[in-house]
Structures are given as structure tokens and as C-alpha cells.
Length: 205
Image 1 (tube, helix red, strand yellow):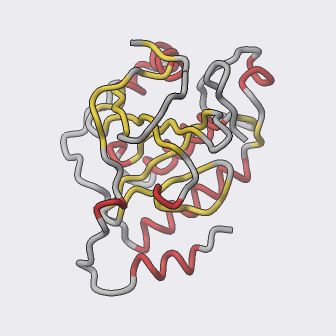
Image 2: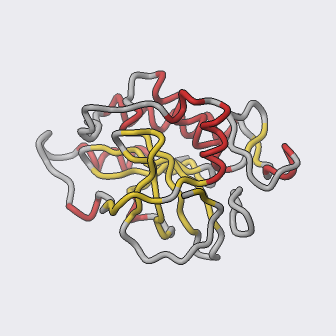
């Protein structure tokens, strides 16, 4: 939970998958289906502290940062993991679980939004998807509160896995303002997303 502003609270898979995979296999996504990345950004304090406890979380360097090829098989993996984690983990705040305002961890039974993201990222990586395509992302909800989602970088666009819904959407189809995400080539580095933002979040330089 980001201090002061952080809160977290059946996919139409056949319809969306049909749209994604219709037409020729070489069809390309529109440019606005992909986030535009800016320069280096500050690391969320919860991620920084996670990295101190689990250094391997922030030491992954990815040489090949090409987007993931979004095949039917990959799409099904995304749908399955997103829905499974959303069902298995029950939402509670960091304060309720750990007695702290912000504490990122892999959940077992309960978790805050960033905990859902961590678990989805790990389980998708275990299916063979590169961590360079699975990026923790900080957004602002329409009510101004902070939130964390998982961005999956694909050749069909950037898709969002969210604990608030089982529906997987292209980032442009969500109602969030996108602030920052992990760098595709280095799991310990964060980059800005070019979008208006004025969210005050707990971070380290």
C-alpha cells in the first residue's frame, strides 16, 4: 500500500480472444496499444524493501526485451493465472495483514494489490514467460487512489492483469492513469509511463 493514497481492492475471454486472433497471423497492433515509456523513475518503497529482503527479485537482467508473442496458448495462460490468483487470494490491506502501511510480499491466503501482482508474475514466469514481459505497474484509479497491476508486454499490445477484475484488457481500455512500471531489461529499475500524473507515492530515489 502506498502511503496515504494506495488502496487495492469472467473475462469475456472468447470475445476478446476472437478479436485478438482473427485475421492474419502477421497482423500488427496499433501503436497506441503499447505504453510509451519515458525515463528512469523512482522505485516504490515497498518494492525497494522487498528487494532488500529478496535480492533476487531485483537482479534479473533480460537481454531480449522483444514483446511476448500472444498465441492462443499464451492467452489461455494469462486468463487462467489471473482468475486463479484472484480467486485464491482474499483482499486485505497491508495494515490489516502486517501491521504496516506498505509491505510487498508473496501472498498465501490474503494480500494487497501488489501482492496479487507478485504472485501472478511468478506463476506466469513458471509457465515459461519471460520476466521482461511481466512488469509490475503503478497506476492511479479514477478516485485518485494508487493501485498496482501487472502489465504483460505482447506483440498485440500491453495487457493488464488486475485483482479487481478477471477481465484482461489492453491498457488503453482501462480507467487508470499509468504512472510507472518496471524496466523490461532490469527488474530492479523503474521507468515512467508518459501520461499525466500527480500522484504522491512512497518512493526512494
